Amino acid sequence: MQRPVTMSRSEARFQGRTVLITAAGSGLGQGMALRLAREGAAVTIWDRDAAALERTVEEARAEGLTLEAQALDMKDGNAIKAAVETIAKAHGRIDVLVNNIGGSLHTPFRFLDQSDEDWERVMSVNVTACVRTTRAVLPCMVLSGYGRIINMGSKAGRFGSLFAGANYTAAKGAMQAFTLQIAQEFGPAGITCNTLCPGAILTPRVKGLLEERQTKEEREKVLQSIPVRRHGTVEDIAAAVAYLASEEAGFVNGASLDINGGQAMVI
Image (cartoon, rainbow, N blue to C red; front, side, top):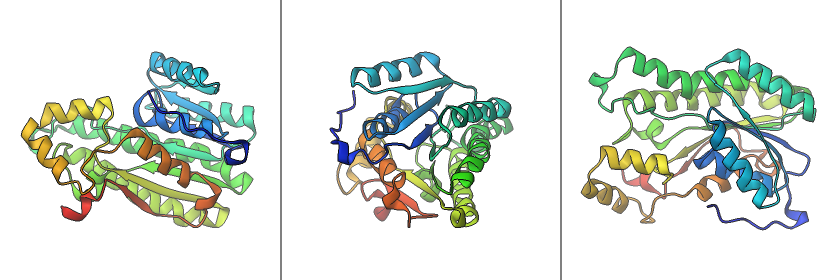
C-alpha cells in the first residue's frame, strides 16, 4: 500500500486541475493517481482491468479521496476519443495527461525470437495508444491555453536493456521523439510535454519480469550497479510526475528525466 502524503490546503497545488492517467489500475499509474488526488486534482483513471480500477478507487476512498474510473480498451481509437470527450464535458477542461500505458507484454526478449506480431502489439500499446490519447486531449489544452503532458519512457529507450527486448526499447525511444515534437509544436500554446525515463521500479509486474529473465546472481549484480544501491519505488515516480504536472515546471519542456538512481552513469 502506498504511504499517504499529507498535504495542507496551501499545498493542494492541483486544486481545480483535471488530470487523466492511463493504465492506472495498479503499479505506477495507481501511485500517480493517488499522489495527484492527495494534492487536490480531479483525477480520471483508465485501465482495461475493471477490477483493478475498482481496487484503486477503493484505496482512494479509504483515504477520503475520489477518483473517476473508466474501463477502456485503448486499442480502440474511437473509444479513446469518446472517453476524452466525456471528461471534457464533465469538467470543462483537461489540464494534465499522463500517458502511462505501456509494457513489453511478455514478448520474447531476444530480437530474432520476436515476430512481426510481437512488434505490432508492443508498438500499438506503447506508442499508438499514447498518440491517439494525446491527439484527443490536445484540443482541450489548446482551448484553455494550458497543459502538461507526461509520457512514460524508460531507461531501456535511452540505453538499451538487459531484460526488455528490442521492440520495447524501440517503442520507448519513439515516445521520446514524439515528446520532442509535441513540446516544440505546442509549447507556444502554453503546453509542455516531457518524458519520464525510469530504471527498474519494483512494481509486482517488474519484479516478476526480472525473476523470469534474470538469475538471482544477475539481479544482485544489477542492484550493485545502481549508485544509490536500491531499486526505484512507485513513490519515486509519483513525485516526479507531480513536479512535471505542476505549474512550477512550466519552463521544463521537451525534457527526458532519468529516474534510475544514477545507474545510467555507469553503463
